[in-house]
Image (cartoon, rainbow, N blue to C red; front, side, top):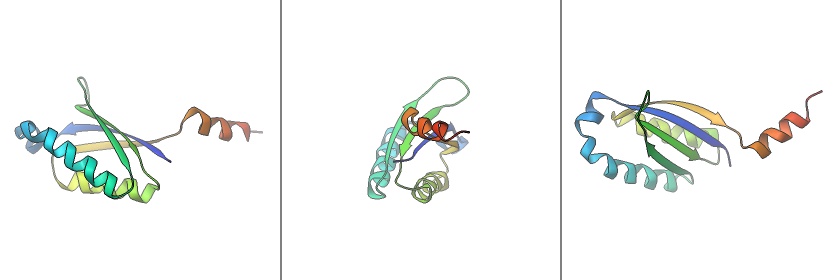
Length: 96
């Protein structure tokens, strides 16, 4: 299943209501499951406030999930599609 790494920062709204973030994280996990995806969320220090690792069956489902999260207005994300070493090895093996 494709993997995605999302780097997130609180918006003004999100940090103002940070005490509600565990409930919001549970709601996002439930939405991901409803869409057939899985999301792990990590609170971080540094340039980003949150890191999420998502597994979704398709890019479209990942995009839908991230758009749903974004429109709630609590975080802004930058997302990268990621490949496991096994997946990347198959691509590297095709190099000429």
